Image (cartoon, rainbow, N blue to C red; front, side):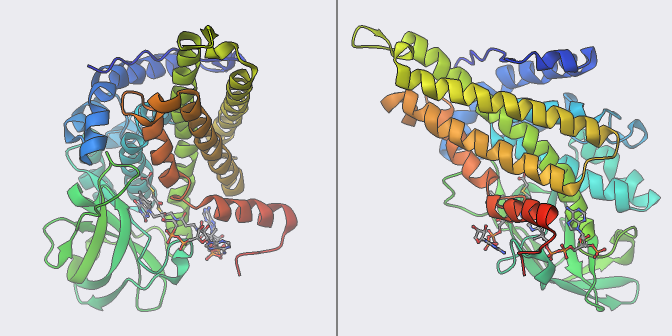
Length: 392
Ligand code: TGC
Ligand code: FAD
């Protein structure tokens, strides 16, 4: 059976910036990943199946809505705790972190922030325990980076609305119980609707043939004259800022999460470089391999400081969308480059499922694209620093 030998890496003493509670949360999630995720995840990735058996355990370690207040089933934890949970989960696999990100930031967050009291009471406690799993429908076949041009729409029909259109590339779609769907009303304004599995005309076909996030279930959300009760419309927001504010929360979690994947790749490559011998000595003794490892731990350390500071700002409600965007872009690229270099250190072994690196590398190709591509995040920073909008 696969043995998870991961060891902690903290080159700059960032742990001293964390509380005892943060470290306890980290240890709990790390143990869960070592015991429950690492031994099975490679098989699920190879088979392209989502490990549903992990859902209860994920809920138990607080991965679903950790910062949602206890009265709605969450744990009322701070933002750094949320980040740490995402980091530890993605150390195991980006797909597992994706499921937790979607559930927490893209389903529970909008219901908590924009939902009616009735909606909060109905859905949040069940989402926190994993009894309900959620999906988030923003992207469409013809509208990815530019979600404001979406065409999914709904029309008033008395006590309900009639929803038509489709969403594509939706994480958790194939097994979700509910979906938070963003669609245009008759005035062309974007609103959020909670669509439930079983509503007539609602289907969630799975997307096959992915070479990335193979242990995560991705699919479409198709709406063919779906009658959605008006009581399922999120009353608290209108316009693109609704879904985009959910993305702020998810992108923040990804900035931490990607470091988990990077740390796992670094840890594996470091150990391999100390054990694998060529030309009579460990490959870690060769300067070219040391350069790779030195650059990896440098970039990871910078990323750790970035997300810690961002977490402090987020706890104080001072983190701007542009600051979050920068951290998502930077840390995902750090992780992707770390994975690519780490794979080379393992030579031929790097392409096998015996080690986690190739799986992380392939997963990160999705992570660098979803929640805003690397290019889109560069443009967000570009707009923020110059004042010029290069999107249009
Ligand atoms: P723009 O005109 O700039 O803004 C429209 C309105 O939105 C407000 N706004 C924000 N509000 C909150 N947070 C943000 N980050 C915001 N960014 C903008 C803005 O103030 C404005 O408000 P108002 O009141 O004036 O109407 O919008 P735009 O159409 O020019 O687009 C801007 C752009 C390109 C940055 C944005 O649309 C974007 O971020 N595109 C990328 C799309 C994206 O990230 N999609 C993600 C889909 S979900 C996903 O990938 C889940 S993966 C899950 C997983 O498995 O982990
Ligand atoms: P496009 O927008 O077509 O972009 C194609 C290329 O053009 C990119 O390189 C992009 O950077 C570039 N580009 C676009 N506009 C500009 C510009 N103005 N200037 C310069 N370059 C530009 N979405 C959801 O709503 N919910 C989910 O749960 C979800 N999960 C996902 C899971 C996976 C595995 C994947 C791969 C995607 C998921 N997505 C989800 C969708 C994801 O957010 C989109 O793929 C992403 O936003 C990019 O959209 P697109 O694929 O349509 O690419």
